[in-house]
Length: 363
Image (cartoon, rainbow, N blue to C red):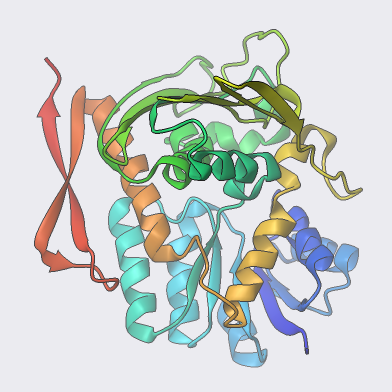
């Protein structure tokens, strides 16, 4: 089977990890890279053996014969580049968050749908081995019907030292870590019918929020609270990039604990298994929990691009995560509960009713 030829847009912080993940997967070859600062693209190209570098994205798309495009730029440019790929009839993978706002996200999905161009989102968090194992436990019915869950990703890690550009984001934690955690919540528990959020800014030298708490009712049965943040405070046994999850069901409980441990407790007792990530030299040691899922996500998306099954995180699917993200901002701004109402008259391309937002005051 011949390799699929692809190009990368972007040479920032995440691009080297994404490209390294592609090289680990096999079956896809990066043949070109674009970045507005060409010297950055040249540095990445040299490190990964990418043969051609461009300083103009249209020039790249006009000259290269590609099977797909991988957009790894900052979120403010995602809409422009995804629509550019659609105009070139080119399947496109986009880094999260999909878009700057909900209108942009909806427009990206529409444009790709009308062009009949596959539009996929690189949402790697749900591809962590321990989260996939927790999903299997929930699907098995072993702990019964989940009625309450906690999803926790809070760390004192000095994230702004590693990624200083995050300081300048006017919307930070919900669009950065939040898109991961809200997608995981959807993956585990289904779609939300209502949501309430509070945010905080602990660091005073940043522009956006660095802490958020999102409470949701999901799948028509489960109360889910997502805790997220990098407040820079001190937590005992800090586990940067590890997501901790506790699920209570009517027949038992399941917990994703520190050190990638999945623990299941029922009337029969407790069993525990670890699913640690495989470390590779290209990964940052502090980021291994998240970096380890990049190649797994890439492999899944590559199969979909080859027509070997449907991708989980299409643009249309990730639009639901975007709805949660921007509903959370609206809830935090207004103090309102957000309800997701189904418009039976309007249909998605999948045939499902369109979900819209409505505001209800908290009493």
